[in-house]
Length: 359
Image (cartoon, rainbow, N blue to C red):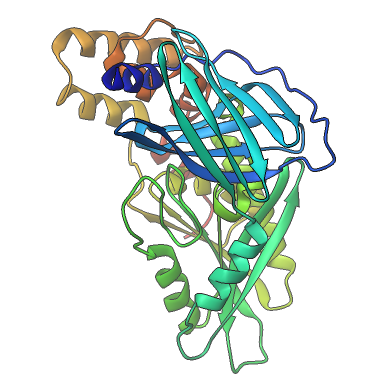
């Protein structure tokens, strides 16, 4: 039964979500972290309630992020929501007590419990700021910008001991649920790569803005359903941050974008709108993503499944969608992620970079 449940959760088929208005003044808005427990099986989850009354769920161990929830019902202290799958709904029925929701989880013949706890983005930012030990000559401040779909949060570091504004830099994280410091809930421990890079650049005289990606950590309140995400969504966020940084009195008009991994593509899309003065690619793709993924998959998949994957790529490249996928392809090509993949496949990184009018 435990193996069956895990398989069911891996083959989620998510239809379009019909937003449900929240009926309580206390709307639970924001991220709630916790886990599902069924016997010896534990799956970490994050449920995020939005201002619009909809909600999404992340299941990092399965690579499932921003899956839309259905039947969201909040009549405090009762909270109920459901996640559709090919073999029936996974239903969560819980009770809120202060900042925790605890309840029962059922899916087909399997049952268990779940528990999630609210993560206050504001408190998280404050705690992170208090815990941060800055190098000599580096100042830091938690900052935020408002977008049409929620607040994005980040950290600005700038040089101490100078009255002159510094040239600005925006750091752009790579793919997945990556926060402003370069850490991901899908990877063990913390590498703090972007934080260390920001502080090192600041020590050299730059004002550096790094931020939590939309839907992640302090920016969790800006979550969009996975099916609604496009690579241009993240590029628009970078553009908004770049414009904010340019008018901050601590910076000059000179602006450089630094993108890591998929952040290279995102930054290359944002750079023209910002008329960026410089661009840096850190381990970015040099070819369209479908070319890279095909090579990676060909080394791992049986020939018949690889033939199916090639067919999926061809359909997505034409702007279509695919249902009825083999289990081995469901995580990578789940229906809710297909529109995002299509948006990324539309770009050749070399063409974008060659067109930039900046060093």
